[in-house]
Amino acid sequence: MRGRNAAAGCAVAAWAALSSCIAGEAVAQYADGAATFAANCAVCHGAAGAGQSALAPPLTSYPARYAAQGEGRRQLALTVLYGMFGAISVDQQKYNFKMPDFSRFDDRALAAVLNFVVFDLGHAPSATQPLGAAEIASEREHRLDGAAVREHRALVLGIIGG
Ligand code: HEC
Image (cartoon, rainbow, N blue to C red; front, side, top):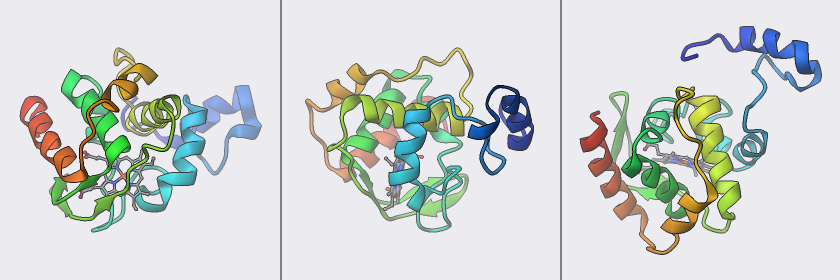
């Protein structure tokens, strides 16, 4: 479904739920995660995860790829639990700002917001397993700081390429 026209998705979804089809967006598969994202993440990453130049990276390319691989799945959990700090580059654009941590959210809420990012914004293939609360819980056991999360990101990119 990568590259699917959101308005076309909306038209299809409208058969089932016209009222939840807002502003040309397709209905979210992960509605709880969508609400958490709109309230906590969209301010930096944008409502559709397109990012903002020099402020916050788009979430439409890497997260879906991370979710296909064990260390990448850990990376997703670590990023929302502990934030990320330091220079990164996404689609040839550089970002060097601070992603805040969201460890105050419970495991289910963090899994849901990540599934919204991975599947609704990133259009991960359907063979990709959704993230579960247990995957978030196991990363709470070894606390990292944002700089270490960035170092782990470099390791993950070495594995998945990019
Ligand atoms: C204050 C702005 C801000 C908010 C709010 C924010 N982020 Fe971020 N996010 C960033 C920045 C900045 C980075 C890149 C950090 C860096 O440069 O090291 C980032 C990175 C990420 C990444 C890693 C992307 C990659 O390519 O590895 C993910 C995933 C992510 N954010 C998800 C979220 C989610 C989910 C939320 C809400 C729960 C959220 N962010 C809220 C600013 C923000």
